[in-house]
Length: 480
Image 1 (cartoon, rainbow, N blue to C red):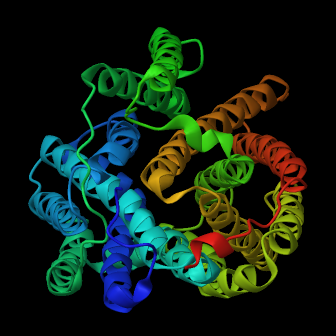
Image 2 (cartoon, rainbow, N blue to C red):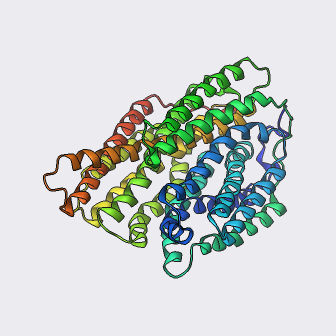
Image 3 (cartoon, rainbow, N blue to C red):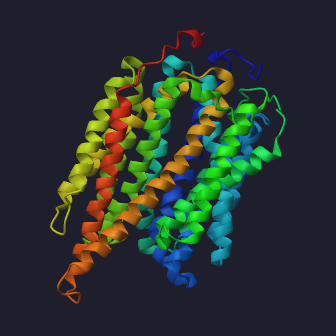
């Protein structure tokens, strides 16, 4: 047996454990997007190019893509308290290095250390909640997590825009640091061990194949998205090597007695449906989160702070609705939330595919709110329903699979959206009569954004088809 209890929550101080995770998770995910607004300042301060500064995001994603798959194994080797303290310590060290970073190299190291902390924190958070909260209450608690996971990245750009108006980019990290220290102290006092480490055998070949596989795919797609294009040798080699390594990794896991990542989770149909819906959601969110700020700052010539403010209402509403959707999921199940949610998301994306140089701020805010309401109806209900179907011994593997593939889906969504945007701009400029007209580049960019949103609509339609198959998982047998 890998766990000490049979799911009884009375033995755990659930609220303090949750608060520790919520503070740590919020700051970790806030700093992930907060830096996006500071990229221009970093280019000027360090005298680097756009392709170089992009590594602050790529490096972060790459570290998550490599470490999160191994988290299923790590969760079975160490106690909850040990992992919580180590993940917070890594986040604090990374944030401190970033706050004092005198050069780009220092900041790059800081981002990797921060990502190591986040890579441990996210699967640990989900796994702990699955163990201490009975299934019939999980929707509400997962909704609180949704508040953190969606709200933190949404307010990150706005808050950092506010900081950057009067202070340097270093202060993005100085502001985060005290909260991480508080979360660490709080966790050291209240965090309890919720599982007994079984210390399964470590298979080095599985770790190598996983690292090359997930790392190669994330790096390949990220490189394509950064403007390298799909035909670049590094993109083709990275994705090909990644896919081959993942095939070998999957084959090896199915042959092992104690696999590093137990792929038996894929035998549970609602887990697979939930996973696919979460992945379509991540592709839509991350492609939209990169397209909208670009459109607002390029086509509409808004400042970073103004662009951040425009996207803030949707982020706040999404955060506030997540716990509400969690409670509705507990009462009514996933179907009555997920299907209408995908209808709203598709409608918002169709709205975004019509934007031009004359589009009003009110229309953009309304479409963004509809998009974020739809996302709150899909993300946590689909994820919770999927994880509910797994037996306890597969919780670490299920959370590792979901969190890993979210990073991969995010990288793919972003890369495809940016490449469609770039080719849309090129095609528009080929057909203009007067290349010197200053209006044409803006029209071309807007046309590229419209094309990229058509890709997001296609993803949403696929998600809608998948959502028809979602069914509520009966959880009485686990609620003892």
